[in-house]
Image (cartoon, rainbow over all chains, first blue to last red; front, side):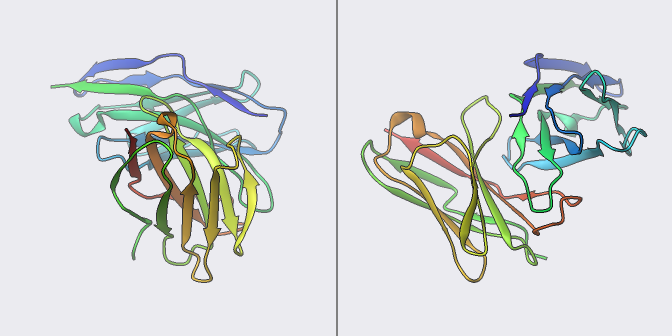
Length: 116
Length: 114
């Protein structure tokens, strides 16, 4: 079974600054995906960024980038130039890479507050 | 392009009652997954439906059951409701075999048990 751990319950950052959210996971699988999802108060789970485990290059999406350390089973999210709209809960999630669709395993999440 | 839609948005029930939640997947998707998200926690996988059959199931009791219709929409049924069933229920849709494409989530149904 897979587990995802987010040990920081909440973080705060000043607008325009950079913040890093931590995530570790445990699995015996070799092929899998890792995700960061954002959930604002509107409740909808929004995909922020995705990383395929077989790719050594860290994924980047505009202001969002990850630091993927496969051997250490670590997957952190860096948000640059933080904006007020980044205030939300952030979830790290794991999915096995299989022929069919697989379930997502989520961490407990971290509440990020961006201060004006 | 219609995304994932869930109904109702909010529901209040009492202990022992039964509830049905509904989900319409994103256009072009054929697989529906249901998740339970307790307050302040991450979503927990309940089960997944494809071709009108339950394909995977998480660690949830038989009180939780589901159904998928020929048009790919899905229902989640919970019997004998307990206070602990109070949560946000999220539906996610995807296309089978396309694991390189993310699951799309709906806005969820907030279920409150009194």
